[in-house]
Each structure stands twice: as structure tokens, then as C-alpha cells.
Amino acid sequence: MPEQPVPAAYLRMPHVEKGMQIGLFGGSFNPPHAGHVLVADIALRRLALDQLWWMVTPGNPLKSTRELAPLGQRVERSEAITPNPRIKVTAFEAAYHIRYTADTLALVRARNPGVDFVWIMGADSLRDFHRWERWREIMLTFPIAVIDRPGATLSFLSSIVARTFDYARVDEADAPRLARMKAPAWTFIHGPRSTLSSTAIRNGHASGERR
Image (tube, rainbow, N blue to C red; front, side, top):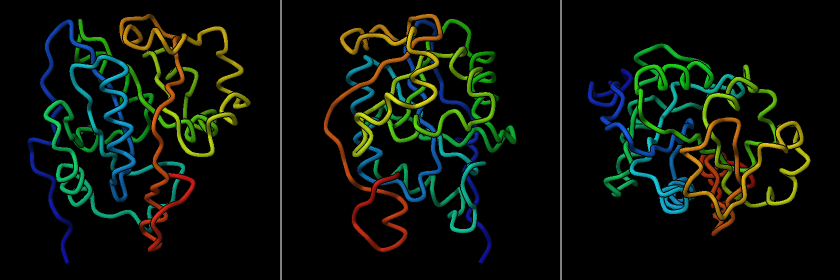
């Protein structure tokens, strides 16, 4: 069965205007689920975002691609569970053959002058963030919002990234201004947490520790 093609509209960056605050929420979304939507909704509200780019990645260098569903299918499923018009599903990284987040952020910054971006990640991802390609460069490109995840509320504090950039941590109360701040700047956002996990869903279970 041939791979489902990705519609051309999803291979372009969403339209933005100067002065906007945009959240960047990337992942394999394999499959996307209500836990992802919860993170997106929390980010939109707490960070006072105009848009959130739901960036479906072609693959993850730190994860096996053996069970990765076709990109077109993951885009279609993401669109189906994100009715909020401020959430923009996109797969533009595939069009630019981008593999690493550092390259994605560099491209986004170069193509969108005058727009304020903030990178969004789950607290569980922060634990392994130091394994990402050029992770220090990522921290210095855009501010970062770390959203609470089950089992990661306290353990994230011992992560290499949190300790290395402790001086750049911003109070959660200032989250609405985070996108306007100069990197490095990051905050931890508490809120409702979902135990849903893409891995568990693929394995036929309802919940799990990691997304």
C-alpha cells in the first residue's frame, strides 16, 4: 500500500504576522492523542499565544522509526483532533528535509522576522534534552516552555539542562511574556496532566509514562 501523500498546504509554514506570539510544539505524534491536545491548550492559554504550530516531524533521531506511521496519516489524525483554529497543523520540516530541531528553529527564525516564538515541550522530554543535537543552541534560539507531565514534575529539576540553565529560569507567573523574552529563558508550567501515551496506545494500552 503506497504511503499517503502529505497535502501541499501542510508542507508550508503557517501564515503569521509581525508582532504575533507563536508556540512551536513538535513531535512525531505517533499517534496524536488527547494528552497532546491538552499540552497545546495549556500552552495557548498560559503563554498568551496567537497561534500554536503543531509540527508533525518526519522522524525522531532518538527513536526507532520501525513503528512510525506514514507522515500523511499522522498529519491527518492530528488535524482531526485539533479543532481549535489557533492550532496550525504543519509538516513543513519534511519539505526542507530537516532532521534536527536546532535546524528547524534556525529556519523558522530566518523566515519570520518580527515574530516572537517559544518552543514547547513536555517535562518528560527535558530529562533527555541534553542528548538532542546542539541542545545548547536550541536553548539560545528561542525561549522554552516546559509543560508538566505525569511522573516528571520533580525529576525535571535534576536534568542536565535545568541545572545548566538554572540562571535563565523564569517565574511561571511571567509565562504570558515568555515569547517576548530574549533566549535563554525558560519556565515550567503546572496544570492538568494526562497519562495518555502514544507508545501505550500503539501497544494497545490506555496510558503510559511517556508520550
